Image 1 (cartoon, rainbow, N blue to C red):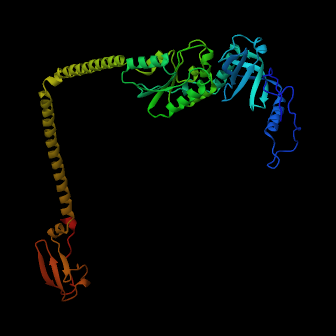
Image 2 (cartoon, rainbow, N blue to C red; image 1 turned 135 degrees about the vertical axis):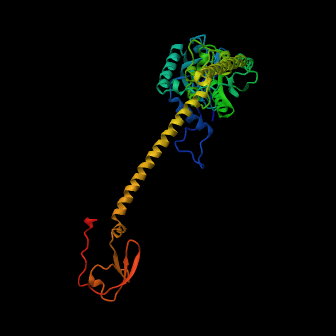
Image 3 (tube, one colour; image 1 turned 180 degrees about the horizontal axis):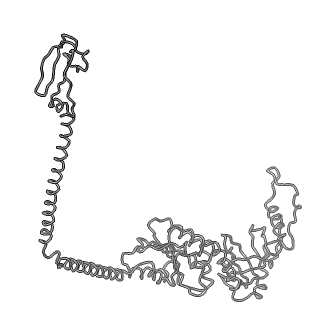
Length: 438
């Protein structure tokens, strides 16, 4: 298969002749009838040519000039995707001279597939730098979105520990920001410990490397707070710290995160999501690490205040006790005994009086009851001359029929008992005296 390529056509395709061989087979490729590599390439180019010219957006990560032409690479702003591009000298002369590596641009391109080399490139027809206004607008849109989701809410921000055992630091390698944080932290607390993970802080590697460093430090149980530090910079160099992926990772981190980007104007969104914003890396060290001298001074002041308070409290209590002891009541305690002794004497006398009176009343009551008992007792009746007649069985004889002739009887008198025998009913008997005659 012969391919004729125009040497002045750098689009990577066949211009004046494509294939001098047989036309492409309409049949699908099989193991028995496979396609030639050239036919696969031709089919790919035919399909890609249908795209025509399209607008794409990305970041210039490579910009090289050779022979008046520009050869570079364009990277996706969010995903890990890159495409090579070519700008011919005729087009380059119409583009802004300020275009360079790191710029975010939009470009009108024609996608070309070079069959011979099996490579895909895009030929740039137009290219415009993405203006700061457009970038700011996108950042503001993201700010509004994340704010509506509550990522900026103060109540979700975590409190920093008073004295972290280990501090995680994400910063550029050998950067001034790293030196500032470490130096100022060690000046404040000499025994402070750091775990530093270096990452790119500008350019295309910023987002993936910062994400990886954040995940590493957040997973370390010894790290109690994480500082992301950079010593300020141009607005475009700070765009990585307004990337949505970094912002959501910081919000989801279980470890408190401090933003120390060090850029007052056009602050990146990381300052809003972080649990604490420090104006500079030096300020971050001061906010995270307490000053040993200041803390010792505070301890001494607290001890002094505590000592004064305790001394004052003891003195007040001593004075209060002295005042109590100086009262007449406590100067001579004998009056208490004397007063209680008089009261006790009076109570004893009163008790004796009441006891004698009560005994006399009870004796009189006993005498009355005894008199009543004697008056009602059969003995009193016997004393008046009466007798009680009982049979041998102890039964009282009440009628003459209860004592037939010959029955043994017992007669109870006032002076004792007599044994008697019944002679039966008497023909006549003396009249029984009336008790009222006694």
